[in-house]
Image (cartoon, rainbow, N blue to C red; front, side, top):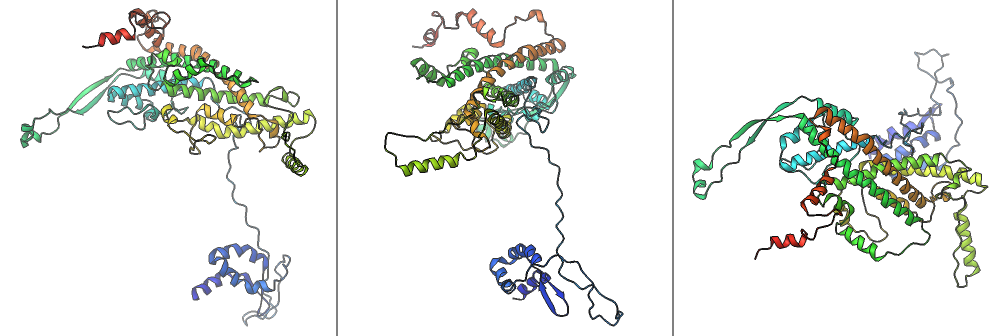
Length: 564
């Protein structure tokens, strides 16, 4: 009780102020300001008990007054005519405004703040930087797979690119391909030509390597001898010569192979995306044919266009590279879609198929007799649902549809662009292990990276509905916006192909001529996998059509390997 009384003294008594001699009055304004604090300190039960007396006869809230001198009896040391300002009820001063920290404006769908710049979306020139980034990671994988630890350590330390190595890699292990991060903008020395110049001008050096030689395997009799069994480890030291021109040659060979395989992938993306766009825009959907079913089974078994290109021996990171290229093209396609929507006017807003000037939502009727009361309720629900729909002429609706589309894309990009930049690190096999229930989504962390197909699926889920959560959203058809986005991505894929062949590949050749012993006249002009297919034709294992020869087919090979 004493502790409670002391706490109440420092919390409740300051709410009372003296006016006159022994009179006390309660300031309701101050009481309201401290009510929350008092309740949190003592709990609501104790708080209401303490305030019961004060709440029985509340006085009207007085207007804010200014302290005035009131004559009161004072001590003898003060002259009789002197006046002392006695405490009176004074309205509390407003709390000072909290310090506002400058916050960067929220990024819009165009990638900028208020200047509508596309800073969040990568330019086509960034494709070369990402190509060299993946070439470095591919070389790190090869060095780790071959156990070449000195060269692996030197390559990832050059220009501080340790973050490109696998996060699961240890000495003697290369790590799984999905542990090599495929996030964009991880190449520190940009543009990629600067990295190639730095590597080409780096002087040769030596690395001192120390390793413990493996001990000789002892027999059981030798292990019983304590002098032989307790031999100290033998450490051998040697110098590893680092020839940067050789390292650059290996890196450029890998980069050229990536150019070849990526170019093939961009062509396949355009072909498959256009097929999907035409299928989505068909009014009458076609049923799967037997040929389509057989093709799906071949794809499931691994017989794809990519397997025919690489001879079922792609580079370890190739599948992740293809998904990364799709994410790169998706980011570029989103930026072009935002520019397309921004360029619309109220007069031309409905020239695109993903904006509609009316939202038809008729009440479903069937052959059964519907009671008038039930029909009335359905119409009432429909009217309540459409109470905020945009009404007016086509110009008014066109302006509202354009603004709604820009707002929708801004929120959509703010949600999905960071995830696309990060990417889904899981392999295709791991992604296929989880089978969610029909109609349910896979449970993923909120900030988890995604691939491009998840973005298409997010737009496809709207089906025939609009984006009703935003004003004017009934005039938007996000599912058709996804079809248009896929069509734009097919065009961006060809733009990326031109970037690879016309901008990136000549720079790789120029670096090879400048810093290595490469002679252009000795090059046959074929890619890595093209050279392998040509060699297969020369050896007789395949004919000019890429098919197995009858004289050297799989059956004959098995027959040669058969042992009685």
